[in-house]
Length: 261
Image (cartoon, rainbow, N blue to C red; front, side):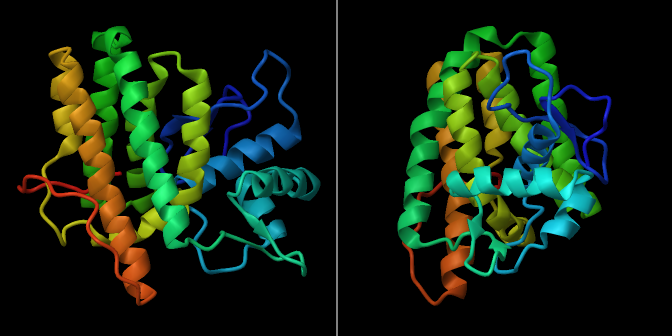
């Protein structure tokens, strides 16, 4: 639930207090409406995997949980349905859209095209204070896994990535990316359940080291490898359950580490 006194572009995870910025679609200095608040709260819930796929979503329960009214929530759902983040059925039931293999491939390609570009644009703007914040999000992500806090794990992973990307003032690209993250976020809880079952190189640490060294090539490779690791696990978790087969998205060096996306 978001705190009433927070900035419009910031949301706080209900159980942990971690503040996560989510870009407003109409952030032009205008006062935030209840519909804006509902929309941002719902976007955040999608991005951090709070809304599970495969189940109907109660509009009233969702409004109550996120601390907004039913009417603003209904308007927010309509907006997110237009962004392919939610599906509204004939009986007015709301659900997470089905993840097909074609849709999954498009989302992965979008991430591989946009995220390395955002990271490269941001590299020269990340100072010591910003890097410390990025490290803090990665530390929170690792600690949340140890504590079994899935929501914080998801929120910290999102915050790690977007703290890097927003440093480059890439408003158009980060807005597009948030739309992509909304669409696969609900499925990422499955990947969280797979943490510890594989051994992967920690790509977040690789990205941090690349930022420290101002190494454009290594930062691009770290972001790409991180996406491939996480999305490969996600694809396996979705399509193995559905009885479909999917080739691995990529290979990486192996050592102890958490899979991120």
